[in-house]
Amino acid sequence: MNEHLKKLLDERAAKADAMRALLDGAEAETRNLTGAEGESYDALEAEYDDLTRQIERVQKQIARETDLDQSLSKPLHGGGDEDQRDDDNAATYQRAFWKAQKGEALDTTEHRALSVGADDKGGYLVPESFATTIIAGLTAKSYIRNVATVSSSTSTENLPVEGDDGENSWIDEAGTYAESDPTIGRVVLKAYKTGRIVKVTDEALQDTIPSIESYVSMKFVNSTTKSEEAAFATGNGALKPTGVLVTAETGVTTASATAIDSDEIIDLEYSLDEDYEQNASWMMNKNTKKLIRKLKDGDGNYLWSRGFAGEPDTLDGYPIIVNKHFPDVATGASPIAFGDFSYYHIKDRSVMTVKKLTEKYADTAHVGFRVDKRVDGKLVIPGAVKKMVMA
Image 1: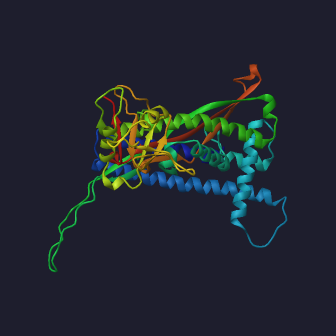
Image 2 (image 1 turned 45 degrees about the vertical axis):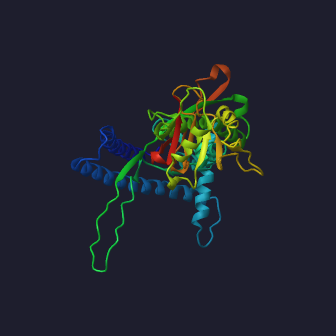
Image 3 (image 1 turned 135 degrees about the vertical axis):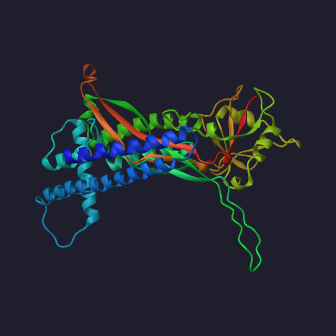
């Protein structure tokens, strides 16, 4: 990696850590930043932004030099196509990245392109197309991610959350407007790292680049989906996202520790504020759904209805999402949640890295790929989802 670029990246990382320490201190004490802390945070943020601009300038210069190298082997033509150059640079990086993972020799252009994505721990940022494949794969196999609000970022994010909307007053023509300020809170979305080592045989490594890319992405998607979705459901926020069942408000506590009756389902449904009903759905695992299918109302009608033509099954008119990471019915468990799950926010860090481990599995003729991504998730308004708690 370019030494100047590495120094700038290290300095920016130090600023980000210092900003995180200030926020963590305030969050641990359930308070806002003090005046002095706010000034320190603003100063660090300004320095972080300045370093980001410097990093972008250096990376652009490296990209320009790469373009110049490429132009030597291409005929000159009038005009310019910035999108085409970006596509060419991305294609060069992707080719160089996977050639490096396979241990193949790189030319000068590929070496220069790959240096832009090197980190200080011997790994490389994955090509954008690979990261996109991972995120798309996670969405296809997920439960909460499919109904949550999902976005990506390169830094920790503070989400302002209104505790209430304030109130209007009725005013005559010359009247005074009454002040009614909403209460504002903040939810911090961090960047928790999840990862694994994907092992590939030496023989498989000699296959074409698309085959290796597909294999690594498939294995990583499968394991990451399990890890993330379990955390999105019941994660305790310690080195992982905070699960929806941890933050959701209790709507009803059952009379029994081992059974649910129809009245308790109705009580849970009506515990949700009307503001969140329009987009509401049920979430539970398959075992709980089996129990719920047998419940009837006072007239002997089943509360559960089968979905048709690809539509989901419903419970009292609201769709049911089956999530295998929700707990079974048991003492103290929360087997069912009801509400608007779009208030669960998932923030993917747009940077992912891969490190090739050549020697670690040499005795079994394998090569390891250590892959990681960063993500956080939180229910930003606890009252948007209500949970059932077993006695």
